[in-house]
Length: 129
Image (cartoon, rainbow, N blue to C red; front, side):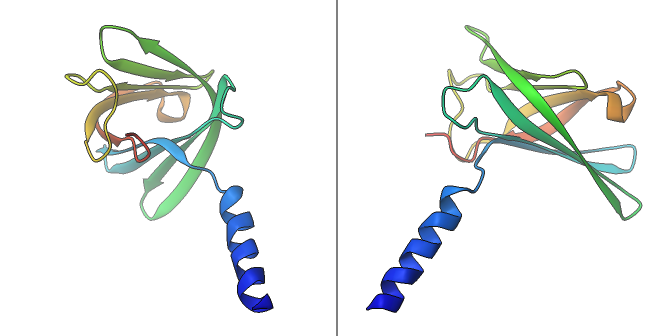
């Protein structure tokens, strides 16, 4: 009985510190694979979130971290994540808010990518309702 109780506590404590992604976007440009993930804020009322831009080219993978702010555009069904070197914009029209299981259009601009404006990302909100 002690073993079961100990295993349950260990599993809960590990999952309590894991980061949940608010949005995940993937795409391709000029032979590069892009992945952008924005973690949900912790604590819940925090203004700042962590974003990770992963670029894979010729088998080499590099990840860059950013601290972003969120800006929503009411009436236009769009959310923008901004920082000094990253701008991720996700358009979830025709929905008023993102829905679980749906894929939306996104675009990214980053100093890591030479400030090139890249459209056509596939974005999803894995924890949306």
